[in-house]
Image 1: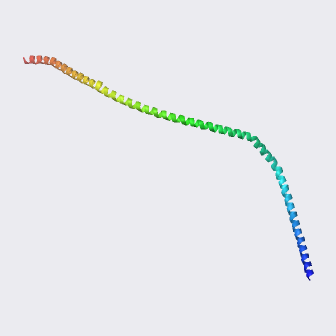
Image 2: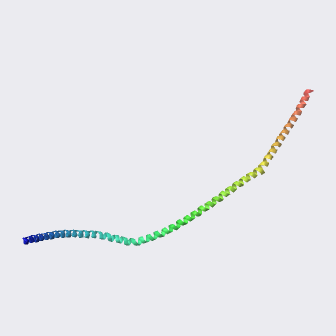
Image 3: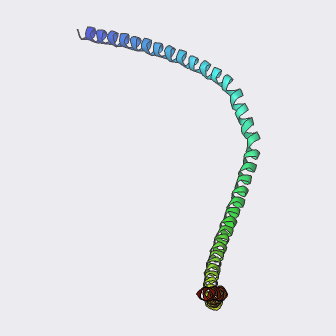
Length: 171
């Protein structure tokens, strides 16, 4: 019985090994098919991607010097613009300072002119207009006096004619 058990055990082990070998062979075949499919897919992808990659590489090779020149030009332009902006800032500051100075001078000039106009007005008032008013008052007084005298002469002349008439009527 011991021999039979060992025989059964060996047969079962042999069957299990054969089944395992069948499973491993099936896995090998499936893996081989997958590998073949992956290789063909990789080949197709490589065939399609190679011209694209070659074109991209050619574009990059062609663009490299242009990009380097563009970068250099951009850096130079940036430096020039920065310098120009700084100069414009300095010029603007100078213009603003000059405008402030001119505004202050203009303010002083206007204040001085206003003071001079006021002083001239006072001088005109005191030295010219006041004496002219006095002269006008004197001329008005003389004119009134002369008018009065003239009116009195006229009255006397007409009064003496009336007196002669009155005297003639009285007689």
